[in-house]
Each structure stands twice: as C-alpha cells, then as structure tokens.
Length: 497
Image (tube, rainbow, N blue to C red):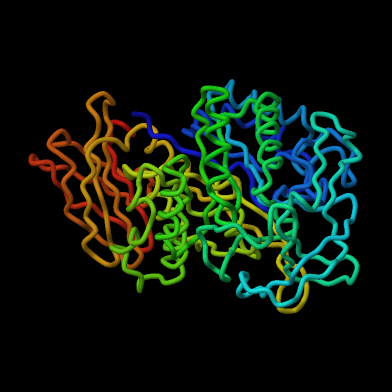
C-alpha cells in the first residue's frame, strides 16, 4: 500500500493578496512529484473581514469570491473561478483536494434583531447569571450582495443558540438565546468551562431542522461547484457530533463517494475526550493528533531533559492509528495564535521523521515548514518586528524516503531517554526499500539495530547527510547506526541513494 502524505497548503500569515489559489495551481505538479498525495485548502467562503479574513469567521458560505460583500469580491485567497481552477489543477496532477468547512458559527450579520437572552457565566456556561431580558443583536443574515442567488435561506436568531455582543448596550458577554427550539447549549464532548458549545460570534443551533437541511443543500452545491475529494472540519469539539454524523452520511450517500474527512478536535492533553468523540461519530472521520503535537512542542522546549521513549504516550496515533492524522504544526499553533504551541526549529526535522517514516498515522505537513513564513511580532518595546521562520531543509529528503523506502516491518528501539530509533525491513515489491532511523535530543549517539538479512553486506548512508561516514550491515542484518547530537539520521542503502 502507498504511503500517503497530506499538506496543509496555507498558514495564518499568508499574505492577503488573493494569490493562494493561483499559487496552489502552479505548485500542484511539483507537490505530487515530491511525494504529496493530498492537500488541505483553507476555508473558501467569504468571512466577515472580506479579503482580509482567513475564513474562520464565516459570513456567507455561498460566496466563494464571487459577490461584492464585506468590502471585496475576492476572498483572501482569490476568486471563485480561481478556486475551481486550482482544485481542477490539483486533481489533474493526481492530488486529492480537501476543503476546510467552518460550520460552527457565523459573523458579520446584515441586520439587528431584538431577541430574548440570558447571560451565562463564561467559566461555567451551564449557569445563568441573569434573568431573561431583551438585547439587540446582529443575528440576521440576508446577504444583500448575493440577492438570493444559489439559496434564499435567511439566517435569523432562530438559527443560533448564542451570541457574544449586545449591540444596543455595546456589551461583550456570552448570551444564551431563547428561540423556538429551546434555550441553553447542546451537549458536546468537551466539558471545559462547564460546556464548550459556544466558541465565538453567532453560535449555530443544530436543533433547528431548517439549519440542518440548509447545510445539506449547501453541501451539495459546494461539491457540485468545486468537486473536492474530502473535508477538514473546524472546531468540532464545540459542536453536537450528531450533526456531522447526519451530514456526512447524507453527502456520502448522495454521491457514493468516501469524502475522506478529518476533524479538528483540539484537545492536547485529553485523549479520552477525543476517543469519546470517535465513539460518538462511530469512526466516520479521522482526527488531528493534538496530543502528539503537544508532545513535540514540549520535547522541543525541554531539550535533553525530555524522555524520547515517551513521545507517543497519550497520543491518538498510539490509541487509534487508523484514524490519526499526525502533524508537527498548523495555523493555530503558530506564534501569536490562540492555540500557540510552536515546535522549536531544531526539533522539527526530528518530529517530521517521527511522523513520516513510521508505519502508523496519516502525516500532514505544514505550509510554512515547506515554504517558510514571515509575520509581524510586537516586541516588548511595543514595536513591530518582522519575524522570518525558515523552512525545514530536510523535509523533501524525508518525503522522498517516505514515498519510496519507508515500508515493511517496523522494529522499535525506544530504549534510551535521549536516543531512540527504528528500522523498516522493506517491501520485496519495492526494490531497495527499507531504512533505519535514529534521533537524538542530546549528545551524539549510536544504537545497534536489526534491519534484516536482506540488507546483509550492504553499505548504508545517511540520506539527510548529517553523519558523513558509511555503515556496513553484518551478515545477520544488524549494524551500529549513528546520529549527531540534537539531530536525526535516516540510513538507506547506498546503491539506492
């Protein structure tokens, strides 16, 4: 079976110049040749900040960069036609294209309504801290720029369970809306703050059957328009899992397609609630391995005091390997973001070796690790400083090994706190395949590991070029492999290099 690799083709600080869709179309062939099999694109719809929006503040899901709304026609990433052309170019190159869906909340309503609410305690959201009273809230979405094209559905307060702004009193708080479907929050898997149904803006109420039906109509329209292969789902820990059960079953039945789906259930140190979500959705979707990303962050900050033998403890890839999408970073973990948890540059090659060259998990690379990133950081002096994050130089070599060589039985040597490794014995149907990997978060190290008798007498070289000397495999298939301090080495047959 082929080793699949996903790429998140955007980052938070990508310039708001409308160029991303064209950039992806131009890169698709190169990405496929590099060993990428699938690409996750950012939210394609218009957000409340128009051409400056990253898309996670949904305004109009039917506006893919086609209507003059929120101050622009194009989205941050380009126009509707450029999106359609980009997805087609990706598929022509042999890539699978996944689109990001943000269906938890909406913002930037066109009109105010007078609605009945109760304030809730932000730290204990099942607790009301006021009697029912009326506020003016921006909860009515009429999309005047679109004028009913594609859908005449009007969103009003009956479609929302909560809101965070009282426009009449100019007060920011969390307000539970009383509508005909009830009051209070749906039961969600995450118990943070008592109930974490409410995240931001106008919180969509999935108790309203009209909302669920509109999302099905939109899903069909979106697929018929864009022809994507699957989905990345935003903020699912804040949503009733039964909605996505219903929606994914509908889409898959309607088109007879798998629609590979990965959900963002961001719970870095809470594997049990992630497993509960998998139970509630009966394995309908994969999840990003947030606990593994947190372990990488911690390991990168801790240096040699981190015990590498524990790097997979409490992770999804250890508990449910078939449903784990492994990652080193994403747009939310970048510096200055809400879930800021970056992996230090020295550790990124080690982390990528851990997700790319092992048997389990579906690895997802991050855009800025392939292309680099620039962003503004406001320093302690109050001044903006331009920060440049360099790309991970080893990434293309690691991808090459994953695509061509990282096959066969895996033998683990996680037996030293600062130096761990594993071997892959290779696949007879892939001549030359097999490799040995060693990583160190401390001093230079070496480890005797068995790669298999098929390699007896072969000379091995470090594909990453860190260790210059060559290694000979003995007649029983063993060798003493080496690694530099704070580094990763990937040993492959010299005749395959």
